[in-house]
Structure formats: C-alpha cells, structure tokens
Image (cartoon, rainbow, N blue to C red; front, side, top):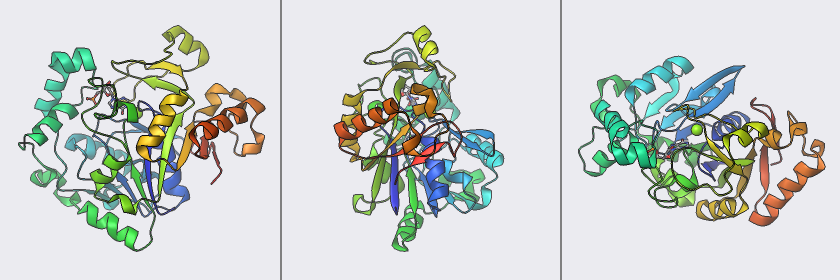
Length: 333
Ligand code: IMP
Ligand code: MG
C-alpha cells in the first residue's frame, strides 16, 4: 500500500478511527492526513488502554513516527485543535494547511439555533454547516489568520505529494459517511459537503491518479444519527437487546440502528471506487468472533456473512474488526 484513502460506506460511525490507527501503525505510514468536513466528526481510538475521542487530530497519531496533517478542505476549530494536541502530545509532528477555514462561535450558535439545522437536519451543532456557508461566501477566516495556529501552518498538498513521490505510505482519513454526503445522501438530511473518496482527495490536495487503495469501512449493522430515512430501522429497545445501541461521540445522542444493508454497501462501493472493504464490529453480530485474529477461527455464520459481502460487492473484505482494541482485528491483506 502506498496511498490509501479511508472512507465510510454508511452514515458515519462505522469505526474508521480504529482502521486508520491500525493501518498507520501496521503499514508505518509517513503521513496521516485528515480530510472530511471538520469537528462534526468524532473518531474513537484506543491506545495503550486509553480511549481518545478525536474531532480534529488524525487517528494516525498512535504511530509516533507518523506526521499528522489536516488538509485545506477541512474546517478547523482552533480551541479543539489545541485541546487535542495537549491530549495526544503530538505538537512536534502536526501541521494544518493555512487554507483551512476557521469555525467561530457565531457558526456554532447558528448551527444550534437555526430551525432547519437544529430541528429538521438535526446537525451535530458544531458550526460546520454555517462555516462552510461563510467559506463559499468568501468571508470565512482561514488558519493563516489565527496567531495560535501559526507554528503549525504547513503546505499540506506539497508535503503529501512529496511523500508519495518518495514512495512513502500516506493515509488519507475521511470522515462522516457516504450517505450523509451533501451530494450522495438523502438531501437535506446530510452534512455540508461531499465526503466520498474523491472529495477526500480534493480536501488534502492529491489528484485521483495518486490513489492506490480505497478502503471502504462498513459496520456489521447500520447506525445513523440525526434526521432522514433508515431502512429496516429497529426500536431502541431492540437495538439494546442486540447490543447495537450506540451513543454519538460528539453529541451523546443515541444512534438509530438497522441491519447491515447490502444495497447501501454496493452503492457506496461504486461511488467511492472501493478496492477493499474493512468490516467492523463483527463481534457484535457474532459474539464468538470476539478478539479473533485469524480468519480460519471465525464461526461458519460469520464467514458466510463475509463471503456474501464479497460476492455482492465483488471486493475483498481485507480487514475485520473483532473488538474495540487496536489489535482485535483480522488482517487478510
Ligand atoms: P452536520 O454535519 O453537523 O451539519 O450534521 C448533518 C447531519 O450529519 C446530521 O444528521 C448529523 O448527525 C450527521 N453527521 C455529521 N457528522 C457526523 C459523523 O461524524 N458521524 C455521524 N453522523 C454525522
Ligand atoms: Mg463518529
């Protein structure tokens, strides 16, 4: 693997954080570069038994040799950046592109008070939609205008492309999910920009010819927060019974849940040009899969589920999550 883009094939919250942190470590990534909307994302990473909930710092931080960057397409909340840098201690290997637009308090207030955003779309209230609107109106502040960020400003497209020229491994970390993309989700129940693989490339300044692998992350069941349709949605009580009840990393809201959808997975694979599937939380569907590291040790039903995904999508399932720990994973690459 040289340049790998990691994106979410459902509605976000499929467990990209774990996949990004695993690959950054396993493949000795030179760079992990964050794409996506901004701090409306919440990525959970477990390192040395400690749980990190990251909204700005890329999940590749777990590898001490990996440079962590935020691409110019991403919206930055400076307070959150400073807070997460303290938590992760990666100040010396971290960069923000000067062209990142800045989320201000007024954006957050608008996101949390606008009737359509708050009550219809049910946004995360983190200011990303109003900030992107200001960016399009060309009145947003940029990272280059913020003194507290000066020391971190880096030309992200140049760093990423040079690393690729040298044959180094780069991981592009997408956020949100295919079906909350502004273009490919169920408008208006979507986030404020496209979040598919091509957009992730654009966010960090690489052309489509530079990408070697697109890893589509799918969870073993589907969850969604906010408004919009969810095919096959089950009740919160039923979700609790099945162990599918989850709570938002950013908002704490209980996520809505539904069974795995082959049709959504297929469409996501198409739109993102997926070359590999990472399937997460297999142990929630098949408890005997918990902690399994070899494919052969999986039960018959779990293997049949994986085979069906591969047959329907015609793409190999290369990474399989079998628990929250970084090492609770099957790597079939
Ligand atoms: P916004 O991105 O905060 O404007 O929210 C728009 C919609 O996308 C809402 O339904 C949010 O719940 C959803 N959303 C935004 N970011 C994420 C994410 O990282 N995971 C899951 N849902 C998200
Ligand atoms: Mg999340």
